[in-house]
Image 1 (cartoon, helix red, strand yellow):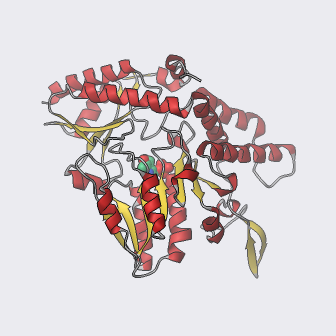
Image 2 (spheres, rainbow, N blue to C red):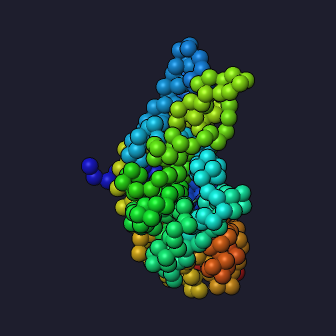
Image 3 (cartoon, rainbow, N blue to C red):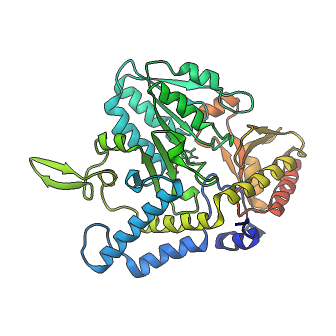
Length: 406
Ligand code: PMP
């Protein structure tokens, strides 16, 4: 099937119709969180209006409907990632997913003398949980560095994979540089050395067709709010043997088979890791989001975003004093930049007055900022619903505010 009509796709997103400061909104912050199509908003609304009940508890009709809707979302997300549903733990997002691996797999497994490998481009969500594990177990953290283009130095990374290394945690796609990492190749090298791999797929799942099973990793984390779904939804895929060996992270209802004061029998995975009432309506929305993205075709989404990235990169090259951070050969539709003589927050604030929403700051990646030698960058991130006209308007607005600040 051919690509969708992108103008009518854009019309599916009600929020993109609005104005800010009297100007049409140009939303270039999708790497932070994505906008939602009407189908997702309506699915959440429909759940609360017509089906709301708790899952896996009540035998009444609504209880059954809610349980089916929740499990159907799991099945659809599993199909989207091309993994088995019983290997997919639903949770609040990538931060939760990575902490689940840290607390349930790494804490019991690691000990003093072991090492964890991270990369320079990690989000704090893929650094801090491992620091907690390191502090509690006595394991050490080693960091793989980047080249000038913002790509991983693979030779350096493989040199770090010594026998003490038990775990490698890294992002599939960088939220700051846009770099797409060769995770399949890296996971193959890690597996040969018996290293367990955790991939943060937050910035990959929204932008490309994924076949998580074929990556060869052990854990893969995604977050719903960046893939057209509601906030507070996400998932951890884990290899079945690992999931089966892991103790629960949180205890409570839903995650048990039988509770006695003398001892409790835990439920099987993935339910063992889903204590308490989940974000049922959120997952109903995520199911609708996955259907929506599948309907567009992820190969078309990727091609569209690559076109927007190429356009933006070329247009930004005409802005005097502008420096782009990260020009990896394989790059997602994210452009981090600074303009000489202007602070990132001042640029973002003035752009906001022009209706343009970009992010400025450290992007939850302090160690990367330290390496780049800056405190903050501006980041424009594009999604399939953006247009070429918006990119031209953004660059024109940037020219205008640059002159104001220079
Ligand atoms: N990792 C990366 C690469 C991210 O971009 C983000 C979101 N900014 C996260 C982790 C955190 O994800 P969540 O919002 O689901 O906690």
